[in-house]
Length: 252
Image (cartoon, rainbow, N blue to C red; front, side):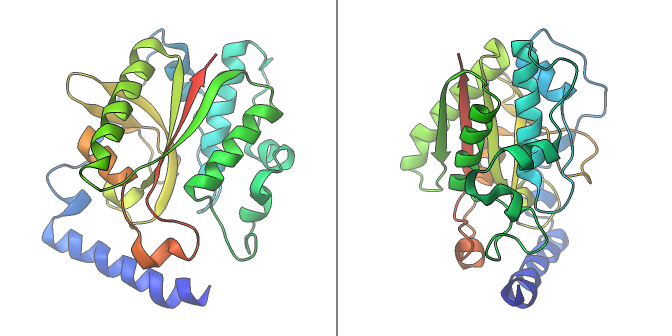
């Protein structure tokens, strides 16, 4: 906690105000565009469900809970087993025991650690689907990288999966990204579901679970990948965070 207060936070604020002053990063040309018009169902049961069951996180480290709640309820709705009663975020924390999820959401965290790094998020997503008996073909964790050679294939597969989500509605993508790469916020790890993709413009829609983000927003595919592959360096590595990535759920 001392490291967080006296080392990480000052560094984050310095970078935030530098980018604001220089109009770079999320303050630059490639800014997020907020979608303020009400969402209308498109006939894509997964996409429609994510907008319908979207919720906001209940504190600063609980983005994983809000995200997985929206995903679980969307899939339960699809299976016809929701019965009009959505699973709450507290329900999830009580039922899903993987990775000491509930403890990580407490004020003190689990062994001083709050939030979920990518690998831990993967474990919790798998366990959540098992607990709620939601059938799926596969659950895959993809670690993003900024390396230009290795990232080429990762980007190609990701774009294909975004198109698959948008056109076929047979999969979901949970993104683990640097929030400050998308919007004028601190450069901190964050989790939210993808809510759409425009194959023509390459714009990705994020259903950000941060309560300060009232509307969904769109970002370019390149910015999306930049946020997924953001390197936190020394700041968060001691807490298990390196680059981000995404969880891909292929439905049965």
